Amino acid sequence: MQTSEAEARPRGMPSGTRRSLHRRTAELPAAEHSSPEADHLAFWVAVVGGQPVEEIIGTVGLRRVGSAETSAADTAEHSGLSEVQLGGPAPHLGEVRRLRVAPAWRRRGVATALMRVLIGWAARHQLSSLVLNTTSAQGPALALYASLGFQEIGRSYLGVYELVWMRLLLPAAAA
Image: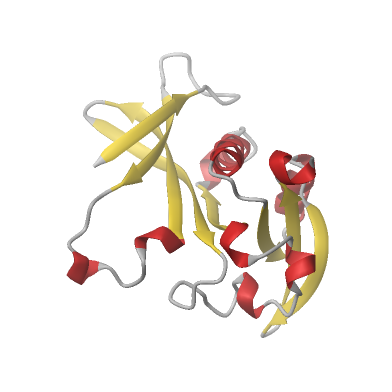
C-alpha cells in the first residue's frame, strides 16, 4: 500500500493530537477489480490519533466521469446535464464522491482540508473541471462547496431528493 500524507490541525483539536490526510492505493489482483482502476482516480481518508490507534474522521473520493462501470443513479452521467454544463469531455472531468465527516468533527475544517487536497490533486493530474452533487437540504455542504469556488450548474431529482449539481473549473482550464 502506498500512502502520501499531509498534516494539519483543525480548530478545536487538542494540541497533542495529529490529523493526517492519506491517499491510499493498493494493488489488487486483476480478478478483484470490478471496474478499471483508472476510473477510480483517488480516495482520501482523514484520521486522528496515532500509534497504535487511528480514528477515521472523514473521507472523500474522486472518480472519472464517463465510466459505465463506476456510474450509478446519482452520478454525472445520469444527471441530465449536458457535457457543456458539466465542464467538458468526460476524460478530463472528475466527480467528487462520498465526502463524509464524522458528526463530532463537523465544522472543524476537516471537509475543507479534504476538498483542498482533492482539488490540488485533480489540477496536478490535468483534470479540467470537477463536478459534484448534494441534496438541496444540505445547507452547510452547499456553503462549503461555494466557498471553494464551485458554482451551481443545474438540478435533478433522484426519487424524492432534489440534487444540486455544482462545478469547479480547475486553474488550467480557467486560463
